Image 1: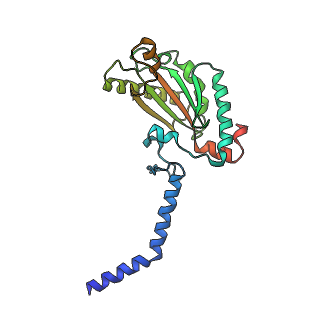
Image 2: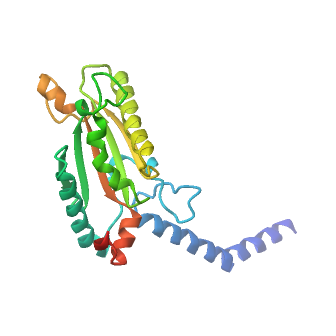
Image 3: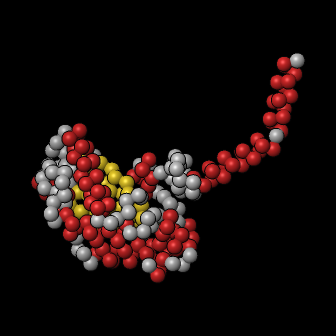
Length: 231
């Protein structure tokens, strides 16, 4: 008798509309996530909009999202305007990457910190303040703060140093009115040099902060509504 009941239950489950409905729900969720990042990373548990938790992504993953689709041209234009605004400050090395959709700024660590220090120097304000405008509107930008060092210290020391410095920069933005809900920090240590560590000049170039301004959902939505040019 139990065997017959089990068989009947299995048949009901297989042909139940509930099973089909559940499959559709999972498919919709998968499609929603893949529209941001094809890797299917975790969603923020408390975010009912389905926004991916960007703090759980690698730098390369964050740089690959979102797919701008039809709004790409408008956003490239907006990023060019933002680059020109920052260029007026003449305080950082600027470039547009990812087909002109992402703005990358590089600041020398010596303009932000004293040697081997993790407390921002008095003049750091001059170099960081131009970026506050990018943090006024939540989710307008996803901001990646990537701190680098030279290789003069141990691996553990370099990672600890760059981690503490990246936190100090994010904290500065928070204290000065920036919305840091969509700011992600990365400690790169000495793993990504842009010059030789065999010379003083090369080590100075390697000690740097890279700031990436990646279009957020708010920017994409404003582009879709035709409001980006009015900002």
